[in-house]
Length: 466
RNA sequence: UCCUCCUUAGUUCAGUUGGUAGAACGGCGGACUGUUAAUCCGUAUGUCGCUGGUCCGAGUCCAGUAGGAGGAGCCA
Image 1 (tube, rainbow, N blue to C red):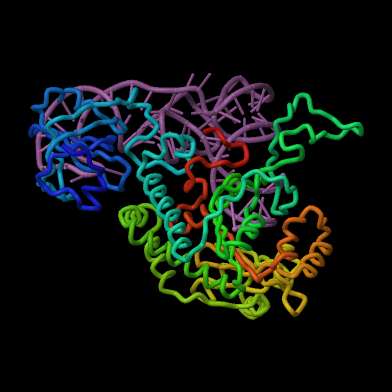
Image 2 (tube, chains in turn orange, yellow; image 1 turned 180 degrees about the horizontal axis):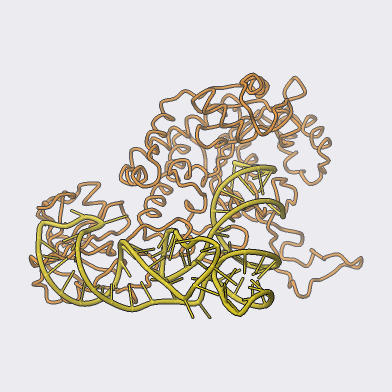
């Protein structure tokens, strides 16, 4: 009597008919037949579909089986047989049903078998993983995460766990969460009345990281090809479908890569992980297509089949100006592209993913490499039809004098970046990288409209209950 | 942070010019059935987000407040 998962039976087809097996999981729903048996749909999370157990009324605890409702936990032992009914290949002909946990009050159990809105499910973040929707989304998320690691490992990138706590108050990418062990009711003060951070845990101000990029550049300067993949924190008061206070980000960084190498890497990576989802999570995608987004599979297939278009920012501005299209924001060289502009380029002009390169220096970060024109930097964004910016990256400024000049322009104190500058003092090398917002990737793949529904426990302003 | 909208049964929602609350699904009981979002019949559901105001009377109008959603900004 071997214990098998529903995926062993339904996806991997590892269990031949006639096998004696045990399935352990939860009830999706129960249907009774007065012909003398009940059907139990049992899921264990290993794949989308449940296994149908056929339970005869001759079991000694059949009275109890009739009380099973959505969400009850069970262990079913029996024989796997070819199903006599339509809709599934196998039945588990049960000869023993062990009831583990009942639903205390089925009438008020928040996860009924019927459809719930994503907003409702968010209020029950501890129970929503039991639903079809979150089940499918989370298996796809897991698939994407593992595919990202596989892709980079296959290209000889080393995974670097960059720190989550930082004392650089200068990472410069938005508001940061403070990390402290000081007693906020009784803060130690210096002689001139300011907070005395020398008494704090790290002896100075500390924050949650907003990016691993600066750290991972140090490792790329030794291991050539590296990537970070982990959580990131932004204390910005933004309430949108695309923002979280705690989210996951993947940031590859490679020595000897220029901007074109960087863009090519991004294209290979996205196609690799999309192909992985199509191959490994077909069951979940079928559900997504049926219930969330009809085009989910088609979108991935078209993305994989497409060649990325490439265009310079300056040329993109021309395209937008000459398009005759009416935008809410007027198009002018020097401005950042609005999402309406990004969508126009990808969806209406190129009809494919597009890499926009070489942005004006004034709208980009200090570490991006200055181009010879003195006006633009070697930055690139990957814009995808249907979502807009999915990746942002750049070639980094490897020349110390240029880096110092840029920091001076942006009024940044070089002392705060002493170790980052050291990379340019000792064996400096051309290098590039990009950042991929992992939840935004999950949103793109699943068609779910909100990053809060593709992360297990979303943290947003005024919401960190679970 | 700004703008707009929403908050009514376990869930999804309806509720007209202001007159003491409805449907579907789910739950429960029954019938029927190799069922599969089963079907059919019956049945119980409620601090109408919260606080105050107008009014003889407020789910409905007004003010405040909390939470949620969408958009903008910022970004990933």
